[in-house]
Structures are given as structure tokens and as C-alpha cells.
Image 1 (cartoon, rainbow, N blue to C red):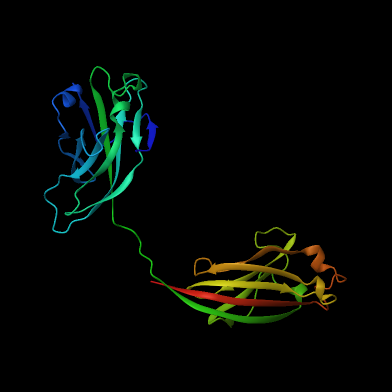
Image 2 (spheres, rainbow, N blue to C red; image 1 turned 60 degrees about the vertical axis):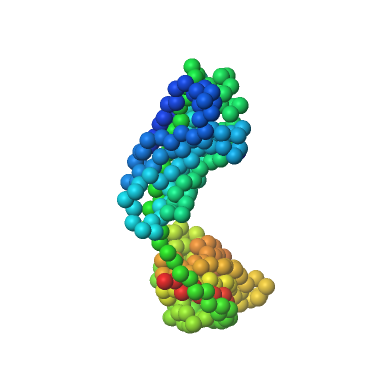
Length: 288
């Protein structure tokens, strides 16, 4: 049974008004094919079946009517059927279906479009003065999809990178580590020692920065060692897909400036900060 939506706007591509609707049943007319109409640069027609396989329902089909198509043609189209409610002034619309039309299957439709009982009940507003109005929208789906091929390489390598950053109080606003290798990929550490990367002067920011071009799934932990008490060491865990367009990930509010600047807290000792980056490269996606 068709799932319906309701809207005020009429169908965009085709409408048909059937007058003397009762004549169809009176004379046992089982099928009616509409004239051709154009949608999406193709010719179509609607086919209504009034006494089909499911005789308690009226079926509504869409058929390709274009005869100038090349051999082995294929057209994908989103198809909606409409029925006008002459009391409310609204249109019932079937839930759109994307259908594939080809030489071996040039007609698709809805076998249980609407029940004869519901359609024929005057209080429902679909048949007034023995006439009713149907409609259709056909939106051709252009084959312009971007195709991505991915080869997932199971790397699953671990790497531990230790950094001893001296002269911490003299670092520039943005400090970049030397390049290092992990999991067959190249990385750097980005550190904002005086304010976070968003420009707020309350926290230090730390990021792992990827220098490659592939997509790399990585789990990593950034540790700032507490040189007085290892239990107070700051550790943050991350999981991220790195790529050329998403090359850095970390924590913009890693540690507040008041804490890291306090010589009694143990994060900066003799103007030296100790970082440890634990990297687990899970997989590399080779995209083509």
C-alpha cells in the first residue's frame, strides 16, 4: 500500500483530469495510457490499471515513451504520483521511488496506488462530479557520481615519540617540531605555548600534524609529563582519520596557562617541557 505525503503545490510535469470516471467501471475498461509528456529530456507516459491483479486497488505506472534512445540505454528516474483532493485543495503525493528504466524493463509503477473504496468515497474529495485529477513528477537522476576506490591497508603499527622542549618561555606563538616517521607516514607536533590555536590566551594547544597525502586512520595519545609526580601527567587520547585536507588533530585546551606556568606544578622544570606522543597507525586508505 502506498505511503502518502500531502502538499499544496501541483505536480511539476504532468496532470490528467478523468471525467465520467464511472464509465471505466461501467464498460469494464481495465487500462488507460496517457499522452506523452517530457521530463528530464525524455518522453514518458502514465499507465493506469483499474482492474489489475489487485482488483481492489488502482495501479499507476510510469513508462518510457522515448523511441530515439541508443542501444542498451539506461535511465534512472525519481517517480512521484499525485492525486488531487478537490475538497481540501491539496495533493496527495506518493513517496518517491528511484527506478531504473532499460530496454528489458521500460515500465515501473505502484500496483496498490490507492484503493477503489477510498477513491470512490465522495467524502474523501478525490472524485467530485464523477471526475478526478492525477499527476506525476519525474526527475531524471544524472549519472555524475564521483567514484572513490579505496584500498585499506592494515598497518596497525605503534610508535613512541619523545620530545624535550627547552627554552619553553622563549618559544614563539606557534612552535613546530622536527619531522618524524610513524607507521610509514611523516608527522610533526604543533604547539601553541602562549595561547590556544583559536587565539584565546588561557590555554596551551597541542596537535599532531600529518604531512602525507593518503587517508590515515590513527589512534594517538599526547602526554605532557609532570616532572614531579608522574600520576599528574596529562594524557589525552584521540582517534582520527588524517588526510591532506584534514591534516591536524589534537586538543585546543590542553592545559591552562596558569597551571603550566606555575613552577611548583611540575610541568615546566628549568624552562623545559617533556612531551610524549604515542601513535598507533591503524590503516591507510589508498584512494583513487
